[in-house]
Length: 629
Image (cartoon, rainbow, N blue to C red; front, side):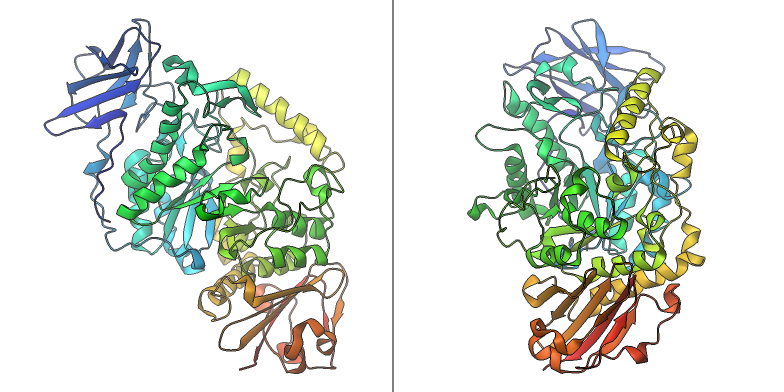
């Protein structure tokens, strides 16, 4: 990668000659000192100078690695809001880090191809027994061989305690000391790029955790009571002094790209980012990233937004913000309802039918605003959004971890139905997101875990239990058995057993994923995510048919039966296929084959001929090929 003139404006910046420039925005303070702890001298304090905007600065002779805090008004000392490292946790001192000292070897890396994107979401702490960035490096070859093109790390910003999902982070510029800190993250990125893998980072710009959050000490204007989120006062993006708050988050995005070579950000719950000023902060962030892109490649911006807010991904010329991707929960919800019959909460707005899934595949999603209750109608017909910008999944950390017992989809349904759903996800036009362990139907649950102080831990447990009672009223009623988030066992139970990839029946599921991703990357039809070269229809109450083709006339037909009954398919009766209903189709793959841990499928008996119906077993996906050139 080429060098960039960008530099973090605040925080501790290592300079030449063993000097460090400290800068912090603290407009309400009358006096600010930077307090360092160089051994053996103990505490040394240096006065900082204030400018007219409330920014305090000092340049000090001290080496990289020095621990420091900012002392406000001769009273209390706090970690740096822009801290690059918190080696003693969120309540400890910050550390001067010279990230430019790392020797990168990824000069040939040219970023991600959005048409080939296969995202693998993982939690660093439970993916390996060690739970570190360096341990994850040892899994990169396997993930690349599987067909993953980008890892998506759940938030790694410093969080309270020894274990956390990461959404309670408070030091947004400091990679978790538990996972290996700044150098560990740099080593991971360098190693990933060497293997042709990109790395996306999940960032939380809608709230900060309560424990260790000292931003109000520097300015009360970081937050506002004018807007409320599920976590309390919203971040102040449109009130007094909001320009400094906006800068904090925009700089955070650029920081990850510049100092860690991160390939993109997934922004958590953008529907809770409130900004009613002139230009939305997400638009401002996207513009800053586009300016940065011209110098250093093309990092991606992806949003999670329960509204399916198209403005996020529409081009700027069409009134949009120009982001690169949008999580679309509609796919998960519609497929999940059909497979499980669960209709609680937001799932109550979904039919759970093959027709609903086919409609989703034709348009890209079902709702333009979040369904609030059963019977909500779709909010109109959506403008066309390229398929690769829509991110589908069978489950993610929320869908699994926010169940009382952390059950995965493969724990709720039989393996044959699970494999059929996997084929649907990976062979339709979209960007698929794989939640860690999906690829081998992992036996481990993914539970909610924390390491908070006692009072906060009790509040979290009470809140989650109440939420569970509301949402899962007819399922899993043994509330007293819910694993306690604070228990170390809860964390340990969530750790994947990666050796399952080599043991039946998990190994068969793994082989299916390998084959499906091989087709996705190398088959001339599947490697282009083009909804205009796709037809999707319901051909039975629970069977979805998807036909796709390329410009050369190669055609593929996927049938997926997600129901409980076998369903018959008569090729000659499918007028929607046009001329393709009049030719012979040769079977390529069936999810029920023995090599995929299935009961066995005789592919030779599955040739599709007009007027010769075939029976598609419940919980089975079959793929056929034809040539109409």
